Amino acid sequence: MIRATLALWHREIVRFLRDRSRLTGSLLQPVIFWVLFSGALHGSFKPAGVDYGQYFFVGTLAMITLFTAIFSTITVIEDRKEGFLQGVLVSPVPRAAIALGKILGGATLGLGLAIVFLLLGPLAGVSFGWSTLPAVLGVLALLAVAVTGMGFTLAWLLDSTAGYHGIMMVLFMPMLLLSGAFFPMDQAHPALSWIRFVNPMTYGVGALRNVMQGEVPGVPSLGVCLLGTALFAFATFALGTFVATRRSVRNAT
Image 1: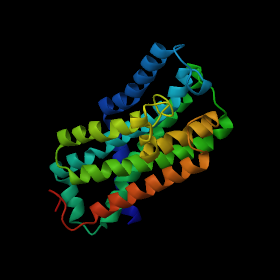
Image 2: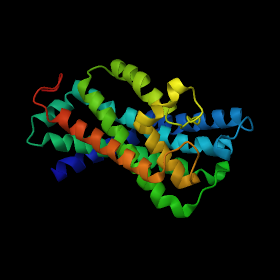
Image 3: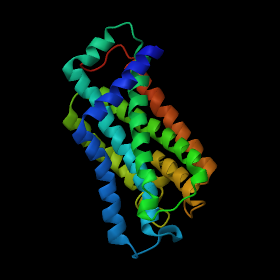
Image 4: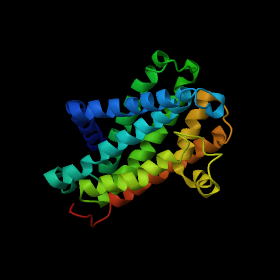
């Protein structure tokens, strides 16, 4: 199982690095978002008492992790159509290894791109304590596993890349927007404010804020955020493994 997991993990990494358009898009899209939003809203308001560029920097890290997970797990549908997934399924490899390899591959990519953006922080005028770097990487790793597991589950159940993109816009983007990544949610309309408590992305973004910026008004404590992110990662990983080990999977058996 370990060899199969490592082989699938390695395939995801190599496949991503060889796809220059995907690599470029994954890096530039969040950077452009950060530049446009921080530039347009600079000086307009200071959420949580910090410059908006610093506030949105944390949200951009979460966005990079989420977008990379989306683009990496869509390869599940592509592998099914190309016949690679069927070849893996008829092999003696445990299906749990398939889920583990694909999820860890996508999570590694998300974490790697987030680290690249994180290292660019000082150049953009975003300051944070380097002593907190291990904690930041730990939170990013948990969040990467969580969102990749969620993306893997949806990709396994769907057989259309267009359908997957539709679900992504309906589910993933609202989760990110309502997590406090772009704007504080504590002063949002009551009809939306309560959503942050049931939105699992809130706790991943909140954990990053607590580690990088200290306690922020309206954001749950670090302990609550870490617990919520860990449960989110465990639940999506378990769900991804469950759907992969089912006997009947759409267009995959």
